[in-house]
Image (tube, rainbow, N blue to C red; front, side, top):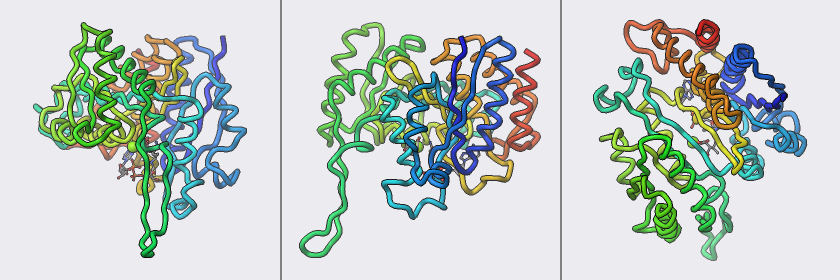
Length: 360
Ligand SMILES: NC(=O)c1ccc[n+]([C@@H]2O[C@H](COP(=O)([O-])OP(=O)(O)OC[C@H]3O[C@@H](n4cnc5c(N)ncnc54)[C@H](O)[C@@H]3O)[C@@H](O)[C@H]2O)c1
Ligand SMILES: CC(C)[C@H](C(=O)O)[C@@H](O)C(=O)O
Ligand SMILES: [Mg+2]
């Protein structure tokens, strides 16, 4: 049956990296006889320019109707001075929230070929394979009340709220434990239970869920320690489960272990595995439009789409293999470049993955 995919390139490097990822998706579809219909939509700055809002109702309706979404990235200096309510990032957050995409998988996997590209010593990162499971529709990103007010003395004060319901914690904890069962059966739940009430509930509920997974080893870690451990001894981790903001920060940090943020894909899933797939990085305005961006995180996000939403494991594996083959050939975008390798642009990297996939 024909599956429908909404493609939203977004802003900055978004269109460049999405174009390469679509080429790879089309090659995979041809090779594995998959039938996809791609439809285009705007999100973020691109949507503000066209519709005046970062996520138009028509686009949201389309997003509800399709089977999966491929997103580039949103945001950029052009829209930074807008009212926060209509900034590009609000469109992304609304989409996550409206579609119930609470389960954010961010795998940090070091391709052995890139051990030299990491800012850490090769022996610290070689063999690294971590999965960060980030809660994506709750916590401080969405909590109310939130406001900026003027105090009686004229001073400005701003506040946010970090709420978690136990049902929200339970469902993301289950995702973490289920994922761990498919991997090395270790979950580290990261929180700040020594300070935050929301984290104390988080820890309690994770412990409750753990009772249903006696085969999975559970540990708890405070987020500040986790940040330190991630650079000191990252290979101790298998699955990290954490709340929205901690997961945002730790996943950027974990990306550098893999050589570059340009390597880190992501899947944002609802309870039926419908998903939005996007690189974990942003729109990189500093390198946009120059054919410099690494498209591999977006290409690997397509692989995650085939794996998690469409259950096409062979096609997903093949894309990962093609990426590995291209790295074996010594091709590198600037962000993962090291001595002796061949520096290529966004398009050449995408073309090389398509060619490697065709050859498999
Ligand atoms: N999911 C998203 O759409 C998303 C995620 C993060 C940030 N943003 C937005 O992106 C804009 C820029 O944010 P930022 O600069 O903090 O983060 P960023 O991830 O866009 O860039 C951080 C650094 O990483 C580099 N980089 C990122 N992706 C790369 C790639 N594929 N190849 C090579 N280098 C890459 C950039 O050049 C930059 O030096 C902001 O408007 C921010 O809100 C969007
Ligand atoms: C752009 C921003 C809203 C987003 C987030 O904070 O979740 C981004 O940093 C990410 O990691 O996807
Ligand atoms: Mg982020």
